[in-house]
Amino acid sequence: MNKSIIIFITFLLLAGGCSKKSDEQLILAEIGEHKISLAAFARSYINEIKYSPVEIQDSPSLRMKHLKDMITRHFLAQKAMEENLQNFPAFKKAMIAESTAVIINGLYEEEIASEMGEISEQALEDAYQKLGKKLHIRHLIAHTKTRIDSLYSRLQQGESFIDLAKECFLDSNLRYNGGDLGFNTWGDLDIDIENVAYRLKIGEISEPIETKYGWHILKLENILVNPILRENDFQMRKKILRERLRYRLLKNKADLRIKKLMKSKNVRMNVPLILVLEKEQQKLKNKGMIKIADAVEIPNQSFNGLLDRYKNETIAFYDEGVWTVSNLKDYVNTIPSRVSEGGIYRAVARSLRNYFLLEIAENKRIDKIETVRNKINEKREHLLSTFYLDAYTDTCSFTDKDYKDYYERVKQKRYKDKEMKILEILVRTESRAREIINIFLDRNKDEKVFREMARQYTIRPGMKKKEGYLGILRKDDLGDISRLSYRLNIGEITGPIKSDAGFSIVMVIDYKEVFTPFSEVKDEITDFMQKRKKTFVFQKMKHEYTSQPEIVIHKDLLLNAF
Image 1 (cartoon, one colour):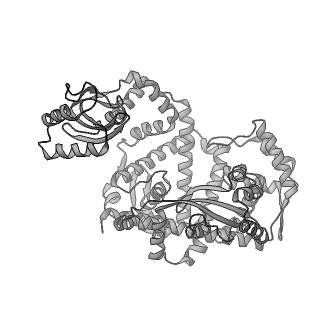
Image 2 (spheres, rainbow, N blue to C red):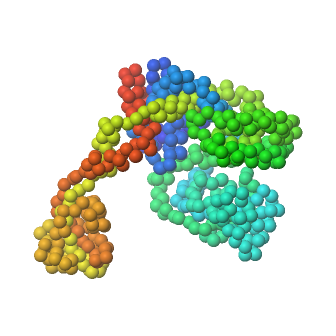
């Protein structure tokens, strides 16, 4: 097996919670007294690969880049400590939510993971096959079996998804787009929905299915297929597929366990009070007093004031007690901001769930498990670095030298052009163009032959005498002719190229590289760098921090020792 695959497999095993104690102690980098362990690196690295918006592959350079990113975040976290950012209310709030998530995930690992067993080869092959398909799906939802059966019956009688969606959804987008979920691939949807969706044929409607969200009916509108599935590609992806599938199964089982837990507690929501609070919350939003929080925003005091006004009201009941608005305020910091901003109902359900789970976790001493403690410390450092980077970026400004340095780094890729001397033979039909290409290929295939054939065959006015010479062109001067010529080396031909005039065969006989001057693209570069200011500031800091002599990176361990 390829060494890089072995390394990657090890990363996956570590990130999946299967690391041994020694893995927490193996050190990849030392920054003074601070150490970055193999296990910490593996957890962070696998998340980058799993959740990257573009597909990336494991490589030595990517591992080194990621390790240097972690080193930089450590320095930023230290800067944050010097600035006392750990005492900011926003940091404390975010850290409570991050720690809660780690502890609850540790509880899932303790209670559920050991019961799951191994992921079968067949399950991995099925997942890989599904990765090659994108499904365009619509769905309807209901909270009861009776309601979903009624909707299914109406569909069977000829009513449309679009009409029934207007009755089903509170969400305005789903209500008016007919429950359209768009194109989805493996891993995008709830696993129970996905299992049914991939068995449907185009145009087919599923029978009602139950998930943790309620009851659903699916309709498959279309399928996009990528047929290029190779055995060696499957072998490369198999380990990450195993980890993703393991995570999805764990999460699904955890969600079912939570649903069972909440049912056993006989939780009931005070819907009238929730509606009142959501109405009051919306008033604050409409006045601009509450906005979607970013990483450094201090919790909005007006919303806290709203909760204080109702603090003694009971917002939920369960068999062992009640959940007041005051309890909600105490535990709302254990959930991500995006959840609490999604509505009071979700905030109540999630915070009450966390209360029950944290109580179980405390009894099981989950926070004392070494990997859990380490994960919390890693979250803390990452969060501190984010806070500092956000605050520091606001104080930075770019100079002309920064813009010019960026231009020099990217000009080969983004601002390179060619001044090309191009010959052309234009004919009326594609078949005639292919015939001429074959004649040319059967002869000496040089510039002299092409010029002779241009004098004989081209129909472009005035070009017979010029032997098809179009002049000196840049990439965007003559549509597809110049764009496709840009890809050629001297002496190469391409075609047929369709245009309004007919079909062209072209040859590049000479070129020189040219670059768009900095002065012409300065505004574009300025705008680009300002929009991605935080990224550029981080990269500049990384260059500064990772070149310090006190940093020790154990490259052999990172690249070879696993």
